[in-house]
Amino acid sequence: MVGLIFGFLLTALTFDIPSRAAQGVVKIQPVRVADGESRIKWWREARFGMFIHWGLYAIPGRGEWVQWNEQIAVKEYAKLADQFQPSNFNADAWSELAESAGMKYIVLTARHHDGFCLFDDGANPFTSVNTAARRDFVAEYVKAVRKVGLRVGLYYSPLDWRFPGFFFPDLQRQSAEAMREQYHRQIEKLLTNYGKLDVLWFDGGEQDWLNFGGEWFIAGWRRRPQGQQYKGGFSWQHDKVYAMLRRRQPQVLINNRADMPEDFHSREGDAAVGDFDDQHPWELCTTIAGAWGYEPNKLPRPLKHYIQLLVNVVGRDGNLLLNVGPRPDGQIDLPQAERLREIGAWLRRYGESIYATRGGPFLPSNYGVSTRRDRTIYVHVLKWPEGKLLLPAIPAKIVRASVLTGGEISLTQTDGGIELFVPLAARKEMDTIIALQLDSPANAVQPVRWSR
Ligand code: GLC
Image (cartoon, rainbow, N blue to C red):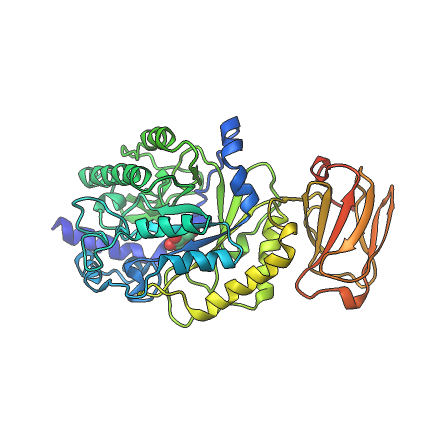
């Protein structure tokens, strides 16, 4: 009977699952402590990483939410594990691809909302170690990523759709507590058995995500109104996880999706590039071809799209985490891999204007964005005005100007601003990068915006 009601309510839920943005559950809890500043240094400099969504859901090929979206019964979905024997899985190929794309870190879904683990979780039957594959993919991945010298990240979802307690944390308290026990245990395993981790990327662990961000009332389920939080009696006890995490791996960076003091904040999707923010470290995650988990025949967009996206993110002082969803056999679709290599080729030529830079000092505007490092400001012109490009004044002297992407430039600097002229032939469609050498450190210049 309980199962019947549960099934019915779950079906009732399907018509209105709120998006993160609509729920308004994103909370900013910046870490302002000194050790936070030092542990995030490498990440700030890295600027570009690879996200990998891979698991059983690659088999049906309809995205990582397929179980939920199609309301596939837990037992039915679990049968996918019998078929999961990725014959072409090669963690070296993944990490070499990321490396050749100019990415500096990778984040792999150790476990998504479906509950299937790509790592060894002891007696838990729902892992790649205890089912057909008989492999610890996380172990292979960590080793391969380290081998090419990239930083290692793991994505982990505290929530698990197999537990009714996620949907009814109060009615199904025992189940919710079992889910919590699993979460604490698995995080400890990940932090203990795989050496040093650089990023733990949480998803769906916010208190407000319980009940899928809604609440049950007499006539059914409704989205929790803006600003109103989960008030039930269940707690994830994230504080215990946080203490254990900092004790075991003080260096590991975490995002904001599990109500713990965050090292960086996640923005999601191309449309969420958002505002310049050099106060709270942030990262935009998005997909290379419109899907997180594998969907067949998804083609990437033209190279220009990714270069401009990366530049727009870095110029706003953020990182870009670009996702691929490998096939069930472990391979990344060729057109996506090719696009990634093209991005890498561009970065090998112009990486000095991306890596280890900070956004600014010219704030993003119609022309594009700027980045800076040492005594250089890189102006990334993404859209040219017809004649000269005018930029606001800065309290530093420009001693030399050049076009990194090739060609001539003339420049005049006055108290009123900076005028740049680059002939049409040297204006690049993707990004014209102008390097301005200053007589003093570029990071000392306060961000400036045209006031008019
Ligand atoms: C979205 C997707 C989720 C994915 C996440 C990555 O929230 O629903 O499946 O893991 O984006 O940020």
